[in-house]
Image 1 (cartoon, rainbow, N blue to C red):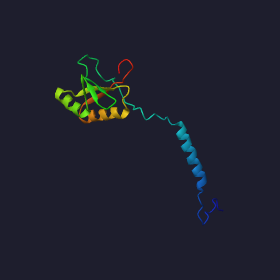
Image 2: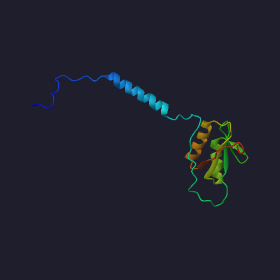
Image 3: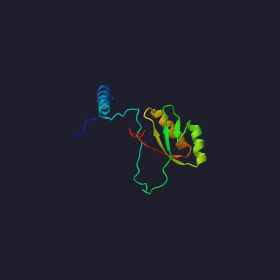
Image 4: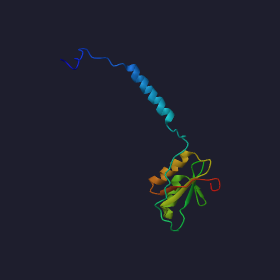
Length: 131
C-alpha cells in the first residue's frame, strides 16, 4: 500500500500571473502606507540632553545667506574665505543658521564644508523672531 502518490515524470509549470498580482498588490500597499517627506526639508538630530548647563562664552553664530555666502559678526564672506578667518580666530565650534530665503542646498553645502574642515557645527533653527 502506497501512502503518497508518486511524483509525475514531467515538471509542474509555475504560473507567473498570480505572482505578478501579489507583487503588484504589495507594491500598492507599501506605496500607500509609507510616509513621504518633502525633499525641501532635512531632518537633523539636535539632541542636547548630554550637554552641561554651565554658562560660558556663547558660540559664534554663522548665518547662511540666499546666495550661499556666510555672515559672521560684521563680515559676509564665501565659505572658503570664512574658513580661513575662523582658523585665524581659533574657532573650532559654531552655531549655523539661515535666512528665511536660503535654499536647503546652500545650507547643506555650508554645513558640509565646515564639518570637513574640522569645525564642529550645531544647527540652529531660524524662527520668525530670530532669523
